[in-house]
Image (cartoon, rainbow, N blue to C red; front, side, top):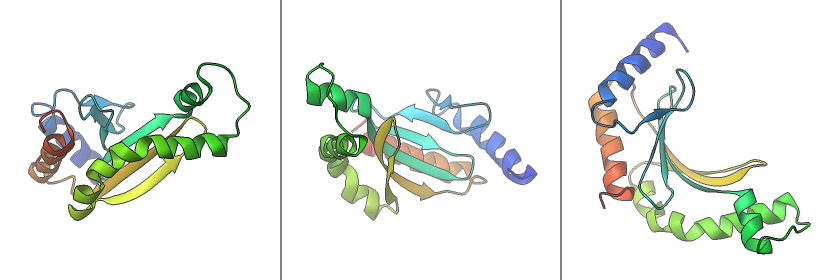
Length: 145
């Protein structure tokens, strides 16, 4: 991170704290996250200037659902497909409005989880615009709906 970006990131974190006291740092100087209500959506603001609205599922949770608590010998690919199936209703609910609002959809998978994320670039030097977008996400997806 360049000095200018680091300065903008630090200033943005300070500016957002009063409006979003629930923001938590993932790691020192890294992304900020907050839950978007009880449905499991997560908002993430990254130091490289992205706002992410994401919904996912741990593969371990999928295994539990598929096997009813008993160990099964399922491959990771099969479990990931099932996770995508399980998260689709929640994702479909907001896909249209997020895409119309300038977010791009991506799917992220690894050994631990499957997530669908909607991301949009923001200007870290414009705290008012970042706060407005985060507030919109909160109103649209979060508990304030």
